[in-house]
Amino acid sequence: MSRLYPWLESVWHEWQASLQSGRFSNAAMLVAEPGLGGEQLIDVFSRAVMCSNYEHEACGFCHSCQLMQSGNHPDFHLVKPEKEGKAISVEQIRHCNRQAQESSQLGGLRLFIIEPAESMNESAANALLKTLEEPSSHCLFLLVTHRANSLLPTITSRCQQWHLIPPSSESVACWLSEQTKKSVPAFAAHINNNAPLTTLAFVDEGKDKQYSKLEQALLDVVQGKGDALKLAKELSTDTADKLTWLWFLLTDAQKVHFGVQLPQFTPGAASIAASSDYALLYSQAQALSQLIEQLREHTGLNSELLILDWLFKFNGETCL
Image 1: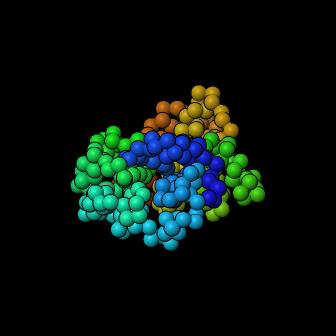
Image 2 (image 1 turned 90 degrees about the vertical axis):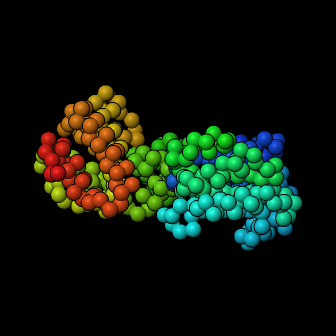
Image 3 (image 1 turned 120 degrees about the vertical axis):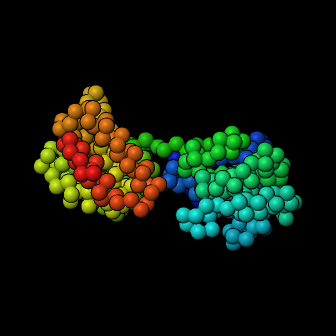
């Protein structure tokens, strides 16, 4: 088995113990934010469940392991949207339900990975419910989700839940420094939700320098001497990432108002705090959070105009 990322090992050890004792639920859910490498954990788990000689991990030599390596195991089923951005359909889930009632073709378990589970439409989720309520003893369902609160409560309540907890900013920075052989500041992990793989891409692509420019541009706007229009235009590309970075900056600045200073704080947090009172920072952070969600749900909106309006409110103005 290839070595797991260090932050995945604790969950894998729990899964190993549950599998060996026969306590792993027939209906389970893994809640994992993007960038934590959950797919590596799912791969190791899937190979272990399918292995005919499983003890602590997949043997890699049996017929089942060979079929998994070739992607042709008849008892392993990965259920994903048929096209990116589309829903998992009710027809896909009904097909799973029928397979779950059949005997295993190789005499072991049938394993169904549904990912991302939140992409099931309502009909698909309802179709899955009955199977989860009365799971077959020879089937395992593992639902993988980034947003468990987007799933039907009746689905989540029937699953044993496991959560991948992001490591600390300092741990991520240390790991990244080992991987990249260069110093990585803790704030880089902090503004990427402490997701190590997302932060690795952030550093590799030079986005730390991009962030620094955005931070200074926002500070200039807050102090009434920046070009809000230019900044809004810049923020209207890769919008979700850039606005999330600024949300972290504003929340760090709010904490500075209460005398909190942590190593992972964004470099400009103190300067932003000195330039704006707490009430304004709080209201702008709340508005920014709502704007991020609004732009995520409605892709046809004029993001540049909405961002510009948000920027103007730092100085009590509006453009809408």
